[in-house]
Length: 294
Image (cartoon, rainbow, N blue to C red; front, top):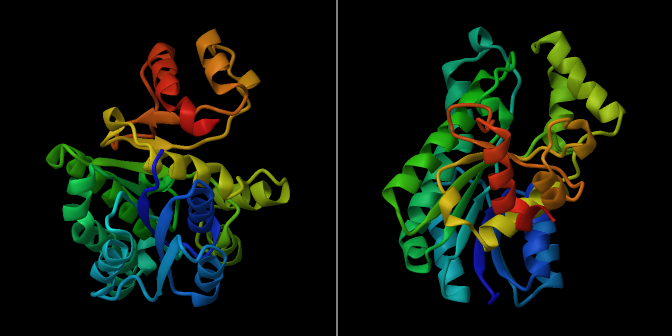
């Protein structure tokens, strides 16, 4: 595969950093952004010919166009976006002010939309891809997550509409699952007083038992997809979940061969938690996706 050019937000740590590292290791070029400049400078230093960056707040009105302009002036094109940034402030609906809602939506919704709009002309030229980093909370309700979950549901809908309106662009939303990132730390430190106890305890237990995903697990899949997208899946919402294959009693031989013990992404539409109607259709989707999950 020839070298491609990607813009990645929230690239200083966690999933964004994992995506960036994977793409760089595949000899692609990236324009990255985050508020923290030091990690971005480190990536630029280690990959001087492959990296350009802008350190700044993603809600700055001019930042999206600056990122696109930097990609085109430095590398000649834009092949894909990974819209990865976001924030979660666990607080019940009745206790969240309208200003707090606006802040969440400025970060989690409008800044991502602004970047996609700024890049869309270049993506048409390259027949590129947009990966919107979504959340299971877009389809499943968690107490004290109304602003966050609804903001991610917007991503799912916007992604599906772009897929419909822009036939030359592949647009997908991917929920990464429970990943050992800073956001999980925020949940554990700030969520106890506002979240449902059982839901809160499940996040604490996941950390204590060491079952949170590493950022590289969903990050590598997202990186592979944006670099080599499957057009037939445009408009879909994926949930990356690492399963123990042997627990699936009705797993078909085809699925078992395809996944090779590495887990099956669950697929569906933006309206639900991504379950296919039959095991046969799930196997077909696993066939489509196995090249990103190896």
